[in-house]
Image (cartoon, rainbow, N blue to C red; front, top):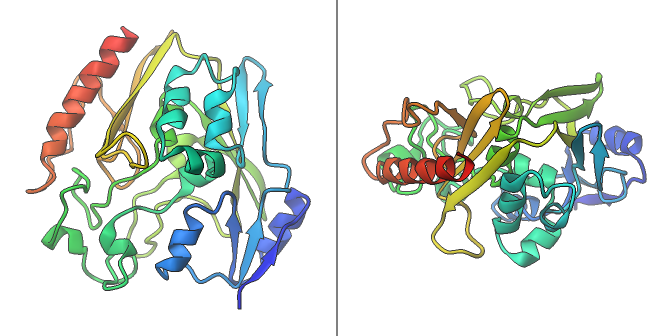
Length: 291
């Protein structure tokens, strides 16, 4: 039987998470699916709702978003208004009920939605076997980038936050560290199949945005407007130092694009090459909005 704890502080939460088989739960919208699909079998669920990780607050010229702030709170926050792409990403993710429950940290750290990874019938390469079944099966919604795993990263927030230059605060047994948001992710290797660059017992505690960009935009394509993960998404942000483009849904981690050649390194696969056309169209639309 899985045990449950609701610590009242971050230190207490980290202590509990140091126990074997312990997993963190923020909104629980992804964890519930992982347990249902037997991706995760936690011995202890550590509920972070009372650990002091919520809220959205001014931080110098920028903003700090607590890891357990919900997508709905981010979308409605006046502090986020100057970061148009972040507000749009938060307001268009999933559906209203899920936005009320899902959190910033959970959205950033969620597992891939690849049906082979989540299916009960298979154990895919990312799950620990030798075969990426998507590459020999149905990969219409998968990534464009070559690799051992061609799953597509599903987060709406990640491209938007990364385009705005966000950093992530993470805390674990070794203390707190801050890293650029895209460094939260890593491409999986045979030695470590994880898509996250967090260390053992390390937890995302906040996302920090610098001063707002001059202009930003978030564009996404999905099968429907509500309750749909982005098939392809692009965030663009223009600052004094230049333009930044970050895409989701085209690789197994969020991917920064070259403004002059956004399709570089993304050849696609036989069934997913249509995403190249969608990506090019979304980039054009986003650049037009920030020009």
